Length: 477
Image 1: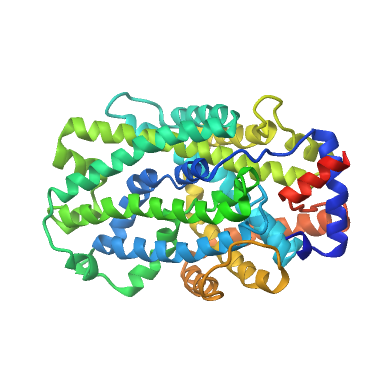
Image 2 (image 1 turned 120 degrees about the horizontal axis):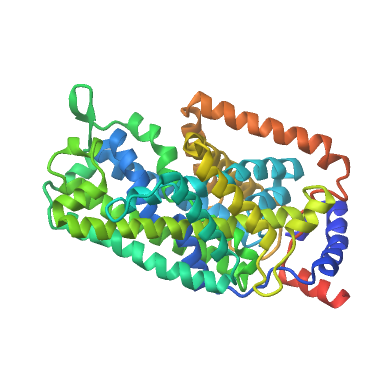
């Protein structure tokens, strides 16, 4: 992907690499195999958390049509995953989306993409962490805000460890949360009340009672349907630490997305077919369903699994988000002193420790003292907007790069599907959420024009940390 840069930016990147190596000794190590990467990415998708936290809210508005909405979201996510794989195998940078967009659509578009992803870096982990106390309520009464802050701090401490140790820890937690989801699926299958036709001729609880599920309702829930399986893009953030990224990043994206979608969709299907009354989908939750089907002890065990899933998600989110912050420092997006601090790596575990603390500690503060959940409404809009930008980048990259990498089948149809489907869903999004997203982009544009754009050779120089470039840097030093 280095050949896609402008001549000036390429020269600056080559000049910057030895400087960074001299200042920090080394870059992120490629030590993560595809199996470990799948565990980390799947933990970030956190299918059990999506199943138990997001899906019940979708059921309230989508009824039994929730299955169709999630299936449509997964279908679009496969197309989005193709964009991540196409771009991520050519630009294996910890910067993820912003690095890929910068090298295809330009520096300004890349910086605006970073601004959008920045909201997600700090908002989503504490929002997820806040749910921990709710699912431990059967065992112990805990203050919700304090528990969320503690989860963030614990996640930060674990994220400071070696990335292979993190893959092991999150893999164990992931197994427990998948077991919890499997219990729901099995209990639901044992209490089936209606046939599979309900999945295709779905219904929703309306003002006049049970009403048919419509295409308009599906479209209204599509951004959330996509959000349910979001997180597979973590493969792009970890690409700089994955061995043979040009071959393995695409595998990690699709294996993670496929497994995550399966863990979410199967229990949702059995639940829709098993509830006594479709109206219960609008008011119930999985804890209530499990308690009715399996008793109190089973419900408590499943809730404990959900709490573990939340901690697991927080760990991986802090870990992946710290890589983006680290990359922004290495790519000189901030004043020099800040860049040096953010790109520091720990001497023992090789983790970007300052960047990890920059994500984790504010996250704990937000969970403890701010109504952070009020901001959750814009996250699906931001994710959808980023997906559209990535799809456009995946269309352009074929015309400007001959670098080896995974090539999506039927190009550019998957990218066009993302632009049309997600773009249409964005048109129907909340005006307030769209306005907030626009405000974020406006502030980011001011920073770009007044600071980054004034010295393009020195500021926001997004390097391509491929094996070849790192090897060249080592030889030069």
